[in-house]
Image (cartoon, rainbow, N blue to C red; front, side, top):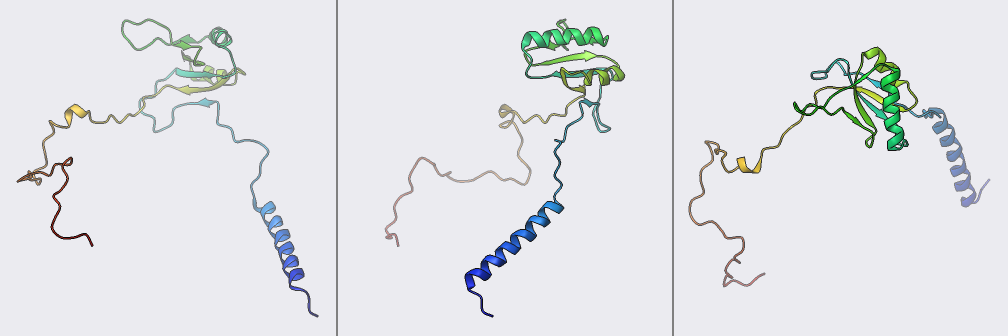
Length: 172
Protein backbone atom coordinates (compact mmCIF):
# COMPACT_ATOMS: atom_id res chain seq x y z
CA UNK A 1 0.00 0.00 0.00
CA UNK A 2 1.19 3.41 -0.86
CA UNK A 3 -0.07 6.35 1.20
CA UNK A 4 0.24 9.98 0.19
CA UNK A 5 3.19 11.73 1.83
CA UNK A 6 0.99 14.41 3.36
CA UNK A 7 -1.14 11.78 5.13
CA UNK A 8 1.92 9.99 6.55
CA UNK A 9 3.46 13.22 7.84
CA UNK A 10 0.14 14.29 9.43
CA UNK A 11 -0.34 10.91 11.09
CA UNK A 12 3.23 10.92 12.40
CA UNK A 13 2.86 14.46 13.84
CA UNK A 14 -0.46 13.57 15.48
CA UNK A 15 1.06 10.46 17.04
CA UNK A 16 4.05 12.45 18.30
CA UNK A 17 1.70 15.09 19.75
CA UNK A 18 -0.37 12.48 21.63
CA UNK A 19 2.73 10.77 23.04
CA UNK A 20 4.35 14.05 24.09
CA UNK A 21 1.11 15.26 25.72
CA UNK A 22 0.87 12.10 27.82
CA UNK A 23 4.56 12.23 28.72
CA UNK A 24 4.45 15.90 29.76
CA UNK A 25 1.28 15.43 31.81
CA UNK A 26 2.65 12.41 33.68
CA UNK A 27 6.12 13.78 34.40
CA UNK A 28 5.38 17.33 35.47
CA UNK A 29 5.05 18.42 39.05
CA UNK A 30 1.95 20.62 38.77
CA UNK A 31 0.41 21.92 41.95
CA UNK A 32 -2.62 24.15 42.38
CA UNK A 33 -1.11 25.60 45.54
CA UNK A 34 1.58 28.23 45.46
CA UNK A 35 4.75 27.65 47.40
CA UNK A 36 4.64 29.94 50.40
CA UNK A 37 7.45 31.15 52.57
CA UNK A 38 7.01 30.63 56.29
CA UNK A 39 5.60 33.64 58.09
CA UNK A 40 7.79 33.06 61.15
CA UNK A 41 11.50 33.40 60.30
CA UNK A 42 13.94 32.94 63.17
CA UNK A 43 17.63 33.54 62.51
CA UNK A 44 19.35 30.57 60.91
CA UNK A 45 22.29 28.61 62.32
CA UNK A 46 24.80 30.69 60.32
CA UNK A 47 23.30 34.04 61.36
CA UNK A 48 25.76 36.57 62.66
CA UNK A 49 24.85 38.00 66.07
CA UNK A 50 21.12 37.11 66.18
CA UNK A 51 19.32 39.21 68.75
CA UNK A 52 17.03 37.17 70.99
CA UNK A 53 13.53 38.55 71.50
CA UNK A 54 13.94 41.24 68.79
CA UNK A 55 11.71 40.92 65.74
CA UNK A 56 10.78 42.77 62.54
CA UNK A 57 7.02 42.55 61.98
CA UNK A 58 5.89 43.21 58.40
CA UNK A 59 2.23 44.02 57.79
CA UNK A 60 0.10 43.56 54.67
CA UNK A 61 0.67 46.20 52.01
CA UNK A 62 -3.05 46.67 51.32
CA UNK A 63 -3.53 48.31 54.75
CA UNK A 64 -3.68 52.08 54.82
CA UNK A 65 -1.27 53.99 57.06
CA UNK A 66 -3.97 54.52 59.69
CA UNK A 67 -5.06 50.88 59.58
CA UNK A 68 -1.46 49.73 59.90
CA UNK A 69 -0.94 52.06 62.87
CA UNK A 70 -4.04 50.56 64.56
CA UNK A 71 -2.82 47.02 63.81
CA UNK A 72 0.56 47.81 65.41
CA UNK A 73 -1.23 49.04 68.55
CA UNK A 74 -3.50 45.99 68.57
CA UNK A 75 -0.60 43.54 68.23
CA UNK A 76 1.35 45.27 70.98
CA UNK A 77 -1.62 45.04 73.35
CA UNK A 78 -2.88 41.61 72.36
CA UNK A 79 0.49 39.84 72.47
CA UNK A 80 2.07 41.91 75.28
CA UNK A 81 4.98 43.04 73.08
CA UNK A 82 7.06 46.21 73.35
CA UNK A 83 8.35 48.48 70.63
CA UNK A 84 12.12 48.60 70.26
CA UNK A 85 13.80 52.00 70.32
CA UNK A 86 16.10 53.33 67.63
CA UNK A 87 19.82 52.75 68.05
CA UNK A 88 20.89 56.40 68.32
CA UNK A 89 21.88 57.13 71.94
CA UNK A 90 19.91 60.36 72.30
CA UNK A 91 16.98 59.28 70.15
CA UNK A 92 14.14 57.75 72.14
CA UNK A 93 11.69 57.36 69.24
CA UNK A 94 9.96 53.98 69.03
CA UNK A 95 10.55 51.86 65.94
CA UNK A 96 7.14 51.86 64.31
CA UNK A 97 6.77 52.77 60.67
CA UNK A 98 3.13 52.46 59.56
CA UNK A 99 3.89 54.10 56.20
CA UNK A 100 6.36 51.31 55.45
CA UNK A 101 4.08 48.67 57.07
CA UNK A 102 6.74 47.54 59.55
CA UNK A 103 7.36 47.66 63.31
CA UNK A 104 10.35 46.48 65.34
CA UNK A 105 9.26 44.77 68.53
CA UNK A 106 10.61 42.96 71.56
CA UNK A 107 8.84 39.71 72.45
CA UNK A 108 9.75 36.09 73.27
CA UNK A 109 10.01 33.65 70.35
CA UNK A 110 6.75 31.89 71.33
CA UNK A 111 4.80 35.16 71.14
CA UNK A 112 6.54 36.11 67.89
CA UNK A 113 5.28 32.81 66.44
CA UNK A 114 1.75 33.71 67.51
CA UNK A 115 2.11 37.19 66.00
CA UNK A 116 3.19 35.59 62.71
CA UNK A 117 -0.11 33.72 62.57
CA UNK A 118 -2.11 36.98 62.81
CA UNK A 119 -4.17 37.83 59.70
CA UNK A 120 -2.70 41.35 59.32
CA UNK A 121 0.92 40.15 59.45
CA UNK A 122 2.91 39.11 56.40
CA UNK A 123 6.01 37.88 58.26
CA UNK A 124 7.95 38.07 61.52
CA UNK A 125 11.76 37.97 61.13
CA UNK A 126 14.38 37.82 63.87
CA UNK A 127 16.73 40.81 64.00
CA UNK A 128 20.34 39.92 63.16
CA UNK A 129 23.52 41.60 62.03
CA UNK A 130 23.83 41.91 58.28
CA UNK A 131 27.20 41.51 56.62
CA UNK A 132 28.09 44.45 54.41
CA UNK A 133 31.00 44.91 52.05
CA UNK A 134 32.10 48.54 52.06
CA UNK A 135 33.84 49.66 48.88
CA UNK A 136 37.12 51.59 49.01
CA UNK A 137 36.55 55.32 49.00
CA UNK A 138 37.84 57.24 45.92
CA UNK A 139 39.88 59.59 48.19
CA UNK A 140 41.92 56.62 49.45
CA UNK A 141 42.93 55.37 46.00
CA UNK A 142 45.65 58.01 45.24
CA UNK A 143 47.21 57.43 48.68
CA UNK A 144 47.48 53.69 48.11
CA UNK A 145 51.05 52.42 47.75
CA UNK A 146 51.83 50.53 44.54
CA UNK A 147 53.01 46.95 44.59
CA UNK A 148 56.77 46.33 44.69
CA UNK A 149 56.79 44.65 41.28
CA UNK A 150 55.25 47.67 39.48
CA UNK A 151 57.74 50.05 37.89
CA UNK A 152 56.86 53.66 37.05
CA UNK A 153 56.42 54.53 33.36
CA UNK A 154 59.50 56.22 31.88
CA UNK A 155 59.49 58.61 29.00
CA UNK A 156 56.61 60.55 27.50
CA UNK A 157 53.08 59.40 28.12
CA UNK A 158 50.68 59.55 25.14
CA UNK A 159 48.05 62.29 25.30
CA UNK A 160 44.59 60.79 24.70
CA UNK A 161 43.26 64.08 23.28
CA UNK A 162 46.06 64.51 20.73
CA UNK A 163 45.80 62.76 17.37
CA UNK A 164 48.82 60.68 16.35
CA UNK A 165 50.89 62.16 13.48
CA UNK A 166 50.09 60.86 10.02
CA UNK A 167 52.80 58.77 8.44
CA UNK A 168 54.04 58.91 4.87
CA UNK A 169 52.73 55.45 4.16
CA UNK A 170 49.27 55.18 2.55
CA UNK A 171 46.51 53.26 4.29
CA UNK A 172 46.11 49.87 2.70
